[in-house]
Amino acid sequence: MADLKFSFAETFLCSAFAACFAEFFTIPLDTAKVRLQLQKKAVGDDVTLPKYRGLLGTMATIAKEEGLSALWKGIIAGLHRQCIYGGLRIGLYEPVKTLLVGSDYVGDIPLYQKIIAALLTGALAIAVANPTDLVKVRLQAEGKFPVGVARRYYGTLDAYYTIVRQEGFRALWTGLGPNIARNAIVNAAELASYDQVKQTIMKIPGFSDNVLTHLLAGLGAGFFAVCIGSPIDVVKSRMMGDSGYKNTLDCFIKTLKNEGILAFYKGFLPNFSRLGSWNAVMFLTLEQARKAFRGELYYD
Image (tube, rainbow, N blue to C red; front, side, top):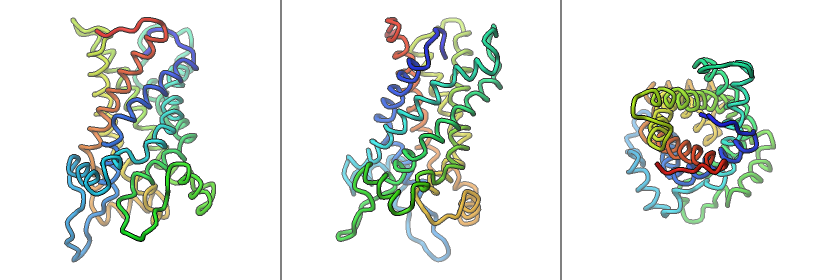
């Protein structure tokens, strides 16, 4: 992912910018994904039709009932998250890879070393950024409130304050277990697969280190990430959006018992639409930002 040598500060700034840019343009898909994941299957004699149906249907329902701006609920917390998580997980990836193989290593780094490096940086980054993720999910989970019913949160900063005041400071790290598992795995799937797919594509005659290669590698990274990370992502979203679960295992068992194994792939298509497009935009922006840092911006 990096042919040129960049400092940690340069990589952190480029990564944070690229992650925030991708977050802003794809968060409507993420909002739809969260609503679909939090929507529970009818149990027993309850034959109520689900409120949200499919990616486009969910987005249309949210826009109709709550206004178009509701699709960007949690954007401020999302940008907070990407500045910290996006900057750290990518900024630390190259140094950790170098640490694992040694500074004198020559040649292509083995895939398993890339996976280990991405697992470590993903876990470390989200451990720091978990409060921003929690607030983002809580805000996205809020639908339209009936007349006379007060909202839980009146903005991003109010959400941080309210959670600490009502649930305690440690509550900001609610869902940390599944979040570390999810983000470590997804980060490994994204960064390692992007590295590997890009490396493979560039060996094909006619391909070079350009926009098309970055686009294809980004989409590939998103596909691998959603296939591997969806079950953990569902558990994470439910634990953060619903305080009725005792712990990660309790959430997993109740979801499996009440809704079946397919519940862990709820929102798969919107999740892939989100992660696929997010990775394509993020890696494309990241590669361009890194080139811009060295005055080598290109548009081919």
